[in-house]
Image (cartoon, rainbow, N blue to C red; front, side, top):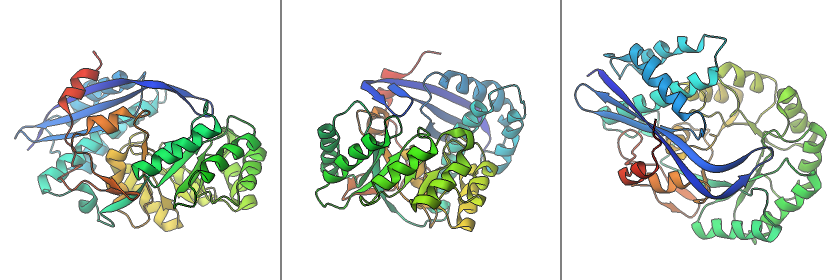
Length: 369
């Protein structure tokens, strides 16, 4: 069995409203489907990322630069294929991040193919630490009143989602603390995880102020609390001065970047993103590092891939999803989406990633190249 061709399908779906984080906004959701076709007819398939303006460029890197390196290669030699793609990141005059996302798309589809060949779901093939995981939503966006934030929590409880990671960092910490408390009060004593994600929005003093204002309201972790310019030292300061658990890693490109966060005592939770930074192959290396440092593993978004990765390691945390209004792709593209019940997500049991994609949804939202 050899690699015969690689097919890339970009999708973009308009959202019902614009969602505002600390210093960004989203009015549409995008992704990129990768299909690796082999000489014996087996197909590895995944979808990765949420890039709106660069998905076509990423797809072209795959078809024009990666495929010539992998054509006729054995797709089950995943590490070998990954190493063959890596030199494309060596050009210091191009955007290395785009190449890493292209590599991630191919790497994910190769692993799906490996699982299908073995007849095993990837979480078991990678080690099998759990077959079900807690699931949380990413929500609590700006431009909502406190009653609306409370209603959002009530909606998650009705959906049986077990928690929410809400947005902070664009307002004064006192205002964000009121927003956080409104969401906590809406749980009415029900078990419900609540995290805060500043998306690098605060300076270090405001991050510390926010953490202290909500210290009695059971914040599970504080994600990317400070601005990027000196984030590793400032995150360490937030951890040590407040005692709050800090999560970060999604903005890092490789294992060495994340290792520096761990060595510097900057994080308790690593949410390295396989779809942004080289694929499951690199994520699993980072998970090994995290185990050595006693750091928990999370994953930034991407439940279709993160569920298998997190369930494969003993220090995995939560599958992250968006509200259906924020991510119509996850809720509609996957025809055989696993059930959610009592705050728990069942890891897909089909071979590979275990996904069956809705062809009608693909045709409706594919972007012409």
